[in-house]
Amino acid sequence: AQAILIQVSAPRAQSKRCIRQHPRTYPPRCSWSQMAAAMAAGNKPSSDQPDGGIHASSLMRAAAGVAAVRNLSVASKGKRLLMFTSGTRGDVQPLVALGASLQAAGFVLRVLTNVNHVEFMRGFGLDAVGTSPDSEKWFKEDSVMLKCMADGNFLEFTKGLAAKAKEAFPKQLEAQWRQARDFKPDLVLSSALEATQAVAIAGVMGIPVVQCGLTALFPSGDDQSLMEEPAWLPRWCHRVAWQLVSALWFQSERDGKHATLLQQLPGCEPYLVRNAAQCLLLERTEPTLVGVSPTVAKKSLEWPEQVALTGFWIVDKGEQQQRMLRGDSMFGGGSDCDKVSGFMLRGARPVYVGWGSMVSVSAEH
Image (tube, rainbow, N blue to C red; front, side, top):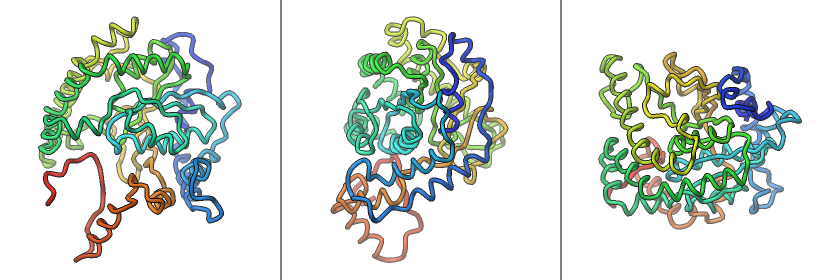
């Protein structure tokens, strides 16, 4: 909320050029630890609160604790934020936590997401609108996507995204552009999968865009790329691999979305990024938020200057436990909880428990 505050506390820019030249006055790094402390204090569920309802949500109480760290200026309160997010549940749930914090801080938020995530988000008190196709159905029923995810084939994955975009993107963009015009945001936030159209829409509307990443995917010689080349390779090999990943990604976005954007959004051409080199040359002043703790990931000197590691965006433990006890299958309630508990009680204790966007190869796996 603090990083976004910098962009919305000033009056709406009068020109696109003014936005690019917005002063780099980011909040001090120490504020993130203060925010984390407030979140920890707000995470403790209160026994005198009812179990159900949006206002009883411990996530919302935790968000209010975070928001209390930094009082919004009079000019900032009520500023309108339009958030673009899509993908599987693992892609959107962190944005639920981020959105709840922003809303509790005093911003007016609307979220554009997949149709299958709308009710999930509304259950946390967010104004969610379904503008993208059902992602779960696509990943479960599309044989090509199932295979490339099971194989970990990034090349085939980008091809699949481009093919899906050509099929569904015209209707998706039409809905997103209609929502943007209706909502009249002061600032746009976007996850990686939605960044191409979010940047274009924000550019046409003359407002800033803050990109929100769930992991630090920035080209660097220090880290493996998504190609998963051996970690022991020299730095230049990692840089080449990252360049290949970037080329594949921008080609996928270009092939799947640019023609539709140019057709439906007159004037968006200056905001369409065609390659990694063009992306590096853009003089962006808006922060890029990454929902990772600086304790876990160290910011590389090769990353863009505006990257801010904010800490993880999570639905707190108390909220998850309450939903599980109410039988919410999205949080392990019901028969699935019994199955997992039984597995953990049998044999040695598990080494690790985690989850993400993945495919089970078989029932045995």
